[in-house]
Picture (cartoon, one colour):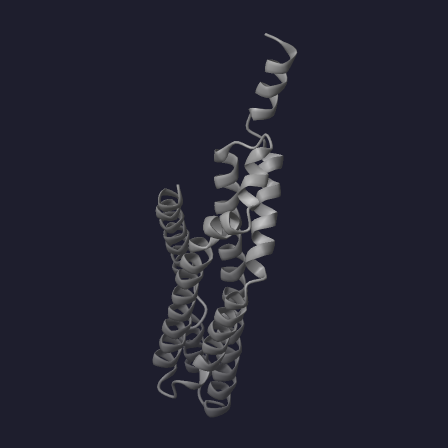
Length: 204
């Protein structure tokens, strides 16, 4: 094998460094999109305002708060997955960035993997931000309800107070929330992958 062939083979081998470079570049480009911030702010406002949407029993209130917040997260991540992914390859073709990248020793697989990973990373960051906002709102509302219950039941027996506080805590923050958040993220990842797949076929 000649030196030129060996060098070519060495360059064409899979490189995580090249994939990481494309990923970070894609993530930077996506975070500059105005639609990303518009959708994120809208979702955060909807999550934050969900605490004012119900004044029923605390079980119903917490359930509505969870439904509205998780619904907002699901809609936002789905829209972001489609919008961010749909313009990736066409935008690179319009800017002629794809020709610059593929002219270098970068296989198509690394280009595709880097682009898709950038979108998935953006979705993960968005999901984490919204989850933090959601859990903070839920925790603050839980503390408010706990204080109200303690004030209203100040003359009740200690056992009754403890039972009421346990019921409030079990209705607010519980482990069942986290599988729901993970499913929302995985659904957005699937939408992003499907959008990227059809977009890649169409542009190819």
